[in-house]
Length: 624
Ligand code: ADP
Ligand code: ZN
Image 1 (cartoon, rainbow, N blue to C red):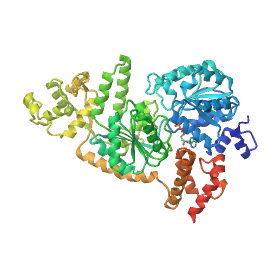
Image 2: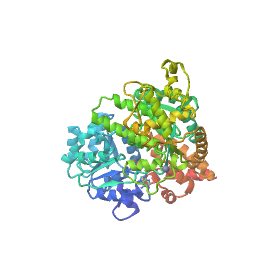
Image 3: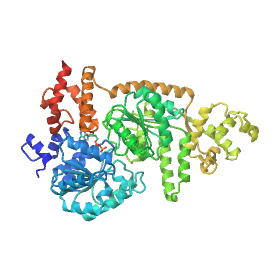
Image 4: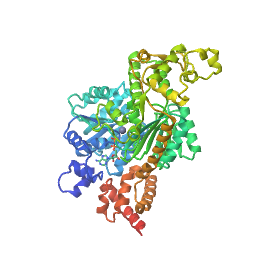
């Protein structure tokens, strides 16, 4: 003590810096959020802990502040270069002595950073795990004064998880070699198995877990029936998110390319991103998404981890994610700034079939397949539920919502009608049975609706008792029924005959009338009605997300333009200069003095000093 970054706060109060004074002066934030204060206190006094917070919950401050308050440098282990780079850029903007050590640095640059670490001239150092674990780096760390170790994205240690990174296993060395340095593990993935693995690998037994609510109340969940996915996506973006930044997830590289091209043809600023693209093009597309306003990135799941962009207004899934954890993490990239955002997905029968096949055909051990299948089933339960999606999601993570309805998901906003579909299910199951469990959706529906196609006649299926017994429903309704019966587990895709369905154990009880089958009503009317009521709400929704009065709208535009210019000049993403919340704060308050400007959330001492005069000049110019 005193550390350089704290010196700024000492100008404000004569007493020693406290967590709150550093939060105010360095980060420009008025108050802690949720458990942050408790966590900061715990780590600052030398405690280990595990922090489980949703994306956007404010995990970074939990280790950044203790690093500033404790003697020595905080070491942050993070798996992604982009994330480290942006965090460090943000810290430098706030006047914190931060640096990053990764494989992209030249030898000279790296050794300069090492010198600074040993000289006590760094508050925070971000290091990629594979680099940290080299003997050379460990030896250097043992000669430095260390404030703490923060292991970000700690779920990467879990072999069962969806983001397993082998190099994370080696992090157990931290407890062995640096037992006196506090360890704080942070993640937004919190199922029980993962949690236990983190505690074991990082030797956190006995240390407290700080578990924040995983609810993201500003995200609206919506999962719709897949008809023409691309048209549905275009309508969704045009009607509700014109000009907004968003992420569209697809399963395959080919689909990423096709979708990005189709959106571009429709006049939407869309860019593709997947592991097969040339590295420089990939980096360029990612940079444009981060730095420009209103870019839509169409990507495989290779994209997103470590993407800190706060103003992503929607995440759309054109294919089913792998698990609820993956869904939650991917959708969690929307609305980190706390403003309204959409998590939107189109989903159909083919999605379940495809995922099941991928699991069936995977080379993994049986135990691994079983875990994957359980995860898929939990996800199918979420997409098929007729109850509140949020309640279901949070329930999966072991959290109960106080109200049974969140009021901000599709099922809460326009509750689907449910009816007893036992007879429909019986007709379907009989048809599968009578045709020898060898046929797919199209053929089954032809028989049920009584169409004498060549194929139907070729197999003599027009003479079966089930022929035409389902003529009261149309194709669309039959497809919806089939999807739900598969989702409920009474039929399963055949792992050998492509496209065919087989009866499961539970099908017998449905056929006997012992198990009732409740089906979501998908009559043409209901679908049309839901469609319109949603797009009406949608348009209101968009205006909420741009909630700036017309008076300050001009100023807001000027502030955005100024921010872009600063970002370009400093070579950082726009939100590293100021996020939208801060710009809106300025546009609303229209401050004319440094003191007034300091009251805006996100403006700390350093940014006030650097940008204060320019911002006040801008406010005055716009007021004229
Ligand atoms: P996480 O790492 O948990 O996803 P971040 O640490 O990136 O989340 O924080 C998400 C956003 O919330 C950031 O824009 C950050 O500035 C903001 N934030 C964090 N803590 C606070 C706070 N106490 N008050 C206001 N904003 C906060
Ligand atoms: Zn709900």
